[in-house]
Length: 272
Image (cartoon, rainbow, N blue to C red; front, side, top):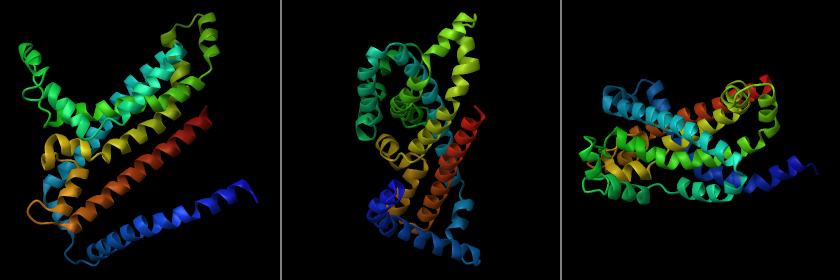
């Protein structure tokens, strides 16, 4: 039996379980919703486009995910390059990055509140410099997202940077190229496919984050994940149709980002 066929046979029970518990209810729920909208009946799309609050939640999700992903990619790439130049630190950095990537949700919210909340340890110091940070606003959410995105980016970029041939830098130096010129002309173009893939995963990780914004701001955090949950539970009354539509929009967005990232990375690898 071919290895690929054997792998599919072994994965069949898991695929059937996923189809029964996730895909079928999702398709059934959203299929009915789309049929109502297509047939001209009253549907959740009218509530969505008539209320700018939900459109703002979509925009907040997109820009928070994109900004935190770009910041995490930039700093994480620098950290991965530094680790590649000092291999003896890789074990410690991998351990700390793994812990940081999973340090999200309530623990992260509590830590940020203790440091930067109204009575936080660093709040008074920031006030003396004329600075302030409200964790319930967009800047506070961006800081929280970066706190768990940055370690994850570092962890994911360690392997691609490690696989980069170290002899290329020595050869470039022999030819008179500076390290900055090497990374601009050789290093970054070779790492670009990996950066695109990691960036798409980071975007999806941030867009689907629920525990961190909810723990910081409760239902006042106007991002898609919190809006979907609040519409299901209902602070005043539930709107399951609208929550299903928002979940469908998030699903389409994540599929486009992850699928587009994989396709773009594949094209970039062919062009190398």
